[in-house]
Length: 177
Image (tube, rainbow, N blue to C red; front, side):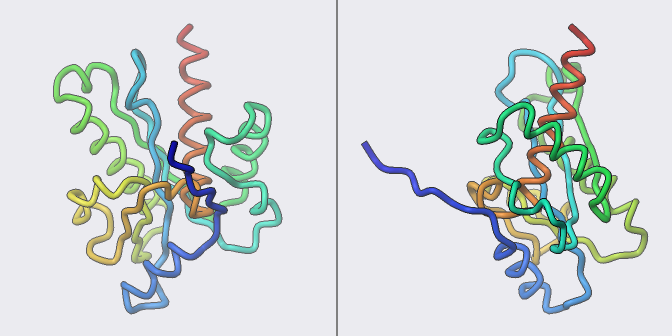
């Protein structure tokens, strides 16, 4: 059995995106989505911008590695203290109509646009969990954006996005039950 590499979140991917942009005046958001393999409910995506000086950064990790209680606490800290975040989703009707891949794309782009709208004129680029999504690069800040596998374990902002997306979707599903 192949041993999986254990990652720790950092700002390395965000810094790589800034270097690729050739401009220190870009803002980098982390992007992640949940609900792609679920049997019901929407695909939910979140985009999160962090300052890098948040005192709770050390607690961030992939939402799947955290307890429910820890996710709830971190979600509230992120939405209260992050400079910007965005939420996007695709409904189960959209999933049925256009398929899961297109619905996933819609949710991610909507989260990015929601975050960008809150930032105003800022030049927003992204670090996205899943290199297979690079085909939507032009919708997510262009060539400087980074698409990386396990980014939710490697990037603070993507980890924050995974926590927000999972918590928002879980709360939605609980209300619908």
